[in-house]
Length: 78
Image (tube, rainbow, N blue to C red; front, side, top):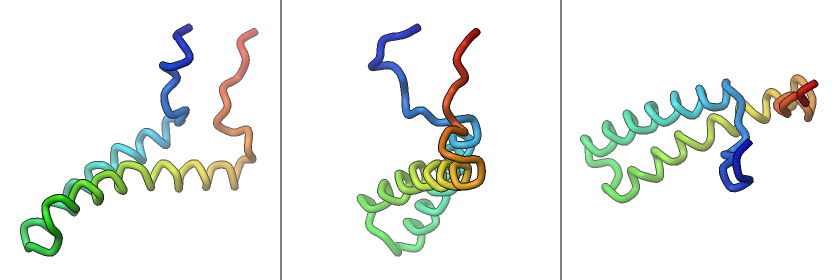
């Protein structure tokens, strides 16, 4: 058991997977947009952060909608 400050975002496995996929998709999209000079360099980080944050939110919302609000809560040990 760790300190309360080390709890993390409270995501489940599918949300971490969505974050990883979104991060790499956002990074790839930023590279393409930067290559064709469609966005400034400082705005590329916004695309990457949005790719990292939006997919886990959507996955969590979808799971709560499908399975109920207590789907991602851990079970208490016996």
